[in-house]
Image (cartoon, rainbow, N blue to C red):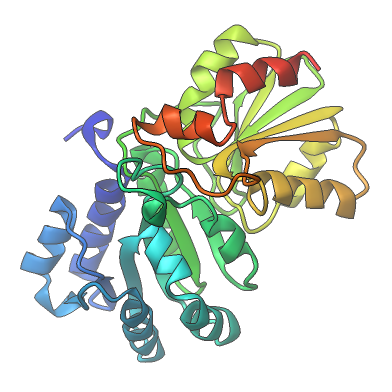
Length: 309
């Protein structure tokens, strides 16, 4: 199956499966989630697969116990449940004890647009950013999911939150492949002193944005737990930075960049284009674009106002 037809979930799990065939310490704990690639692990590597049922807290606890025994555990569930439902377990086992549990979370943003606000992953990054010692990887495509899996498997000693989208999204080639150690890459370099920082599923909007604004610098940010020194140096060259994400405005990419600008006394202004949380959660149905607009994220309208500001 080509990457254009592959979900981020199956791209990541396929890489884990291939590594698991030669490394018996690689184990997957599912909170009753299914996937074609997960079936390979369940069927062909039965000693490395556990289904704890619809019990995300137990998934974190089982994964933590396996990590204490030297295993390399991946806990797999829906994003809104494996975070919010497990906060105390994540805080103690992953943040305080630094046990190298890798959370695989499907459903960032409005991935589950048809399932109501209980399934919307729109405050998960803010919650996970509150915990020290946990890396946060935000995936934009199947290609990047495969790269993320290789990065995680090659660096298994760190607790992580791997946030993926449910949809199959087109990969944006950019200036280089994603380097998850640095956590960013240029999608387009222009002559402007303005930069658009974009993350997750909205990276797929980049080609359209770039075609309309060829002078704009567009950067994909895939690490949301910190801003790498190299990206800080890049931010120093811009006068305006626009952050675009499908997440509540508080606590996501825009907040991370705003904090970085303040902490490092950078001279650029920051505009946050994200979901407005003033009205609370959305109960709208009709697809992703409808939900975005209901919480004030009209990408085309806001983007035009931002670049002409």
